[in-house]
Image 1: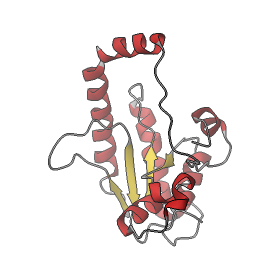
Image 2 (image 1 turned 90 degrees about the vertical axis):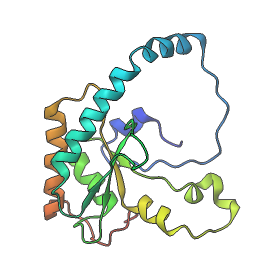
Image 3 (image 1 turned 180 degrees about the vertical axis):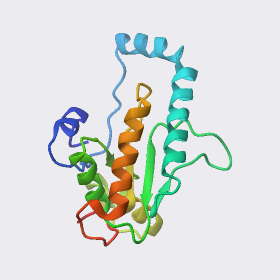
Image 4 (image 1 turned 180 degrees about the horizontal axis):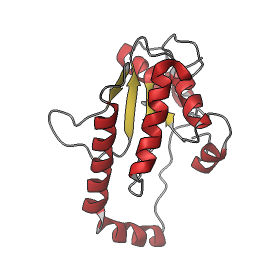
Length: 179
């Protein structure tokens, strides 16, 4: 990735990271493995909390026009490693416009679904037509979701999204992610 999480969170503008090269086989250190083992004891608790927060988002955003929220798939239960929303046709701003709006409100969000075939690391592979992937890439945003999030944090994100849905995020309404 071309941008670190620290750089992205400290930026005063939206940051759209990209992947300039394919991955490496980094191995954990012994200390990282020890921390991971301790965290595994809390896995059920952490996932349960993320599911609670996702349910809060789903309930609070269900009636926001032009916004589709992620949900459990019909064949299973999500752990909500991340929580994304999709901007439908007619949403008053683009993906990047929404990211800018959230940032102005002090909310750190990211572009959503990534299309590997659009990343620089795969540019030499040739062009492919993946309309669903491209639509989701252009129209999804990942919202903040972490186990220490409070109800006030969720409410602040929801309020900002509601304002954007009612036209408070100035940006062209072409529905595309790249303005």
